[in-house]
Image (tube, rainbow, N blue to C red; front, side, top):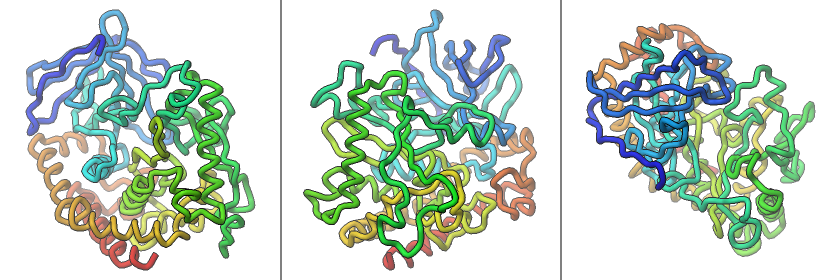
Length: 452
């Protein structure tokens, strides 16, 4: 790969420190401002590079003091530099995620590792201590940015000349999300402003009527649209022919899903989607009871010549019970029923899951997959070991105490935190809440998945 440098191997028992000097530049959302980055292990500088840095997040940026950042590795001339930064897949784009209201510090780290163990790619992660312009800024989770590249989604690269078969068939990445995406837009209404340039709208709205359900999937008081936002190729690079192809593919899938032959393997939905990816996506989001599932931060990808896949999973900071709505924080209901719980929300769950659950074959595949995973990657023993190992690493490096001395948020009800957060004044209390919630959730799913 052109302009590539090698990142040195790191001691896996030591948390790296990242020092960023913004060179008197003020960090903004866009564009990335020139800065310097060093990675230190103890007192030793093991890697240094020029970077561009910007803020990440929309809701999280507005609500929390600890900010997340996107970084792009660069050379002295400002050109992109590819490297296996911190041991990640070779690229130039990485994320420094702030666990701003996740006092377990583990929600994204845990669920991403589980996804990778199950065979569904998710961003690789690594804890780092971040120093910004000489001042400690807290514990962060360095991670890969979702991209089409090798070692990540490994999709075919697309150019503006890929406008006919077979190249026009992929690979694509798109998402169901706020129109703001990772950009900072002030104001609730701005997040709901979709344009044809950056997204397209599903042909179908109120799924309740379509599926003959006894209750509506959507409130009748407001718009009920589902929008798909272009990610790769980006809105500025995707061609008209590529837009037409991916829109028609999704349209055809939705048509097949709603047809009378929807259960038919050759004529129905299975002709268009990778069913296993839909099942794993469902199980991970339901395990974590992710309130954003299926309606926000929901990525999809389509390989060249292949079927539509769900994933990678993304953004679980308000999952695992970390929500001030008791129903959305509960261990004993399905989050795919979000529309019943919050019918007037601006972003609601589309009809896909409801229709898929009308196919007994889909449900049986999911039940079998759950049973298999409960003896392997999603076993209580494996999940507890991941948590124990991560906490031991943090404790060994004194990262927990340092973080909460910087951000005095234990015992504070931050946005989205449940009311019980005020009584959890120690990290141990937050960790116990997290672990006990997972145990209860696994038990409830064991009992209720067979009933679907």
